[in-house]
Length: 161
Image 1 (cartoon, rainbow, N blue to C red):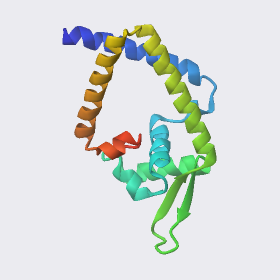
Image 2 (cartoon, one colour):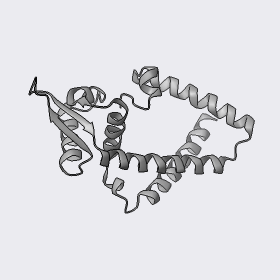
Image 3 (cartoon, rainbow, N blue to C red):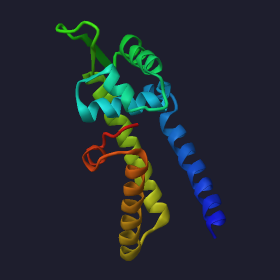
Image 4 (cartoon, rainbow, N blue to C red):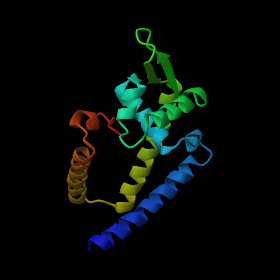
């Protein structure tokens, strides 16, 4: 049974990625990596952060890689701003820009449309919807523990990524 469910989940995941690709075709967010989007979501949830604070959210990615991603989002895409701390010039603050917030709104809207499409496809009864809510909440709690997230971080939509 678990192997069959795994195959079904893989097939469903493929179709959801195809739906995502069709939404993003030619859209500016298609030029963003998944890590870029996660960085924008992190900054949107936390507000101004230092590069070190952002890098701490990515335990398996070097600070220099995160710094390069941030520089690209700043210099090339204008989705974040960078400010040097006047009290300690070794520290750089990063913040999502209005342009970044607008793009993130589009990304979240598309994600919401994909989830709504998935739910329509599944055709949940009221009872099934409640079961799905409980199972999804259980999975979220598991991943929060597995990833070392606090409830506040996860609940705010901004987590260690």
